Structures are given as structure tokens and as C-alpha cells.
Image (cartoon, rainbow, N blue to C red; front, side, top):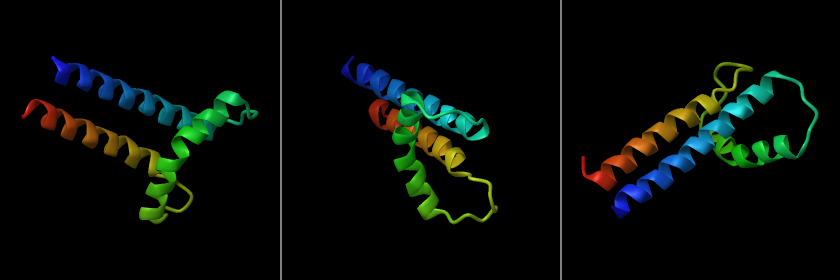
Length: 88
């Protein structure tokens, strides 16, 4: 029972972070004035995206693939944690 509740909390946190990443991608496509919400989204996502950019050089020119890689890493972490918690 505790493992299931822990899984639900972890899964929810990862889903929320995915939504923040998606919002960050959309914000990069549109020009919006800065406000508290956009500042929060950038502050929440930039540490992860910056580390990915440092590890993976910009091979594709001006296209930033760090959000895509972050999505893939979140899925990997989610799968690994599920297998650890439920022994699959």
C-alpha cells in the first residue's frame, strides 16, 4: 500500500514537471510579456534543461532538443522507479 501511494506521488510530480516543460516549449514559440507565471516556468525548467544542453552540444544548429531529451529522461526515470517499487 505504501509503495502504491509513493508511486502515485512520484508519478504526479513527474506529470506536473512534464506539463511545465510543455508550457516552456509553447512559450518559446510565442512572444509573451514576462509575468510571474512565465518566470516560474522558466525557473522550474531551466536547471534541468541547462544540464542537458551542457551534456549534449548543439549539433542541430538553432534547434534546442533539450526539452525532448528531458521528456525522454522523465519517461525513463518513471519506468525505472516503477520497476524498482513493484519489482517488475
